[in-house]
Length: 240
Ligand SMILES: [Zn+2]
Image 1 (cartoon, rainbow, N blue to C red):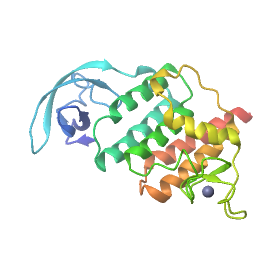
Image 2 (image 1 turned 180 degrees about the horizontal axis):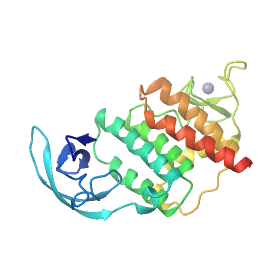
Image 3 (image 1 turned 30 degrees about the horizontal axis):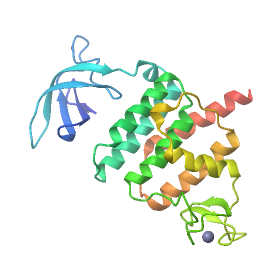
C-alpha cells in the first residue's frame, strides 16, 4: 500500500520471520531503484534492515522470479492476485510455511500459461487442509461409506453416498466431477504439464468450492469479485 508521499509498505512473506511489513522508502519516485521491485508477485532475496516490533526497511531485492508473464496479462494477474489474497487469509489464521512450495508451484504453472481457473480450484481445495476444514474426500461425509458415492455436497461436507443422498435437498454432480474433485486434492501441482477440464465439471467444482468456503471458512475476499468479472468477460468473449 502507498505510504506518505512517495513510499510504499510491502507485505512480504519471509522464511525467517513469516509475514512482515517492509517500508520501501521513496520507491514511487521515477528514479528510485526500489521502484520496480516494490510490487506484488515477486519472489527473491530481500535485503532489509529488520526491526522485530515494527516496520523493517527495504534496501534492495535480488529477484528470483519476477512472474513477468503473469503481471502483463489481465486474466492471469487477476487469478494470481486472488491466489495471494487467499493465501494471505490462510496465513493470518496461522500455518507453517509448507504452503509456500504449493503457492510457488501454482504461480509457476500460471506463468507457464496453463489453465488458471483449474489451477486456482486445485489450490482452493488444497488450502482447505491448511484451514482445517478439508471436506470428506475418501468416503461419504455422513456415513463413511466408500462405495456408491453419488455426488459432492457442500452442506453435508464432501462426498455423499446413495443412501445418505436426500433428493430435493442435495444436487447430483457428474461422476467425472467427483473424480476430479478427489484428484485435485492429491495431485502434485509441480508435475502438471497439461490441463483439459470440461466446462461443465469446472462449473460444478466451482459451485461446490464457493458454497463450501462460504459455509466453513469465514473468508471473504474482495479479489473474488474481480475474478468473477474476469470470468464473465471470458465467457462473453467466447460467445462473440
Ligand atoms: Zn453415506
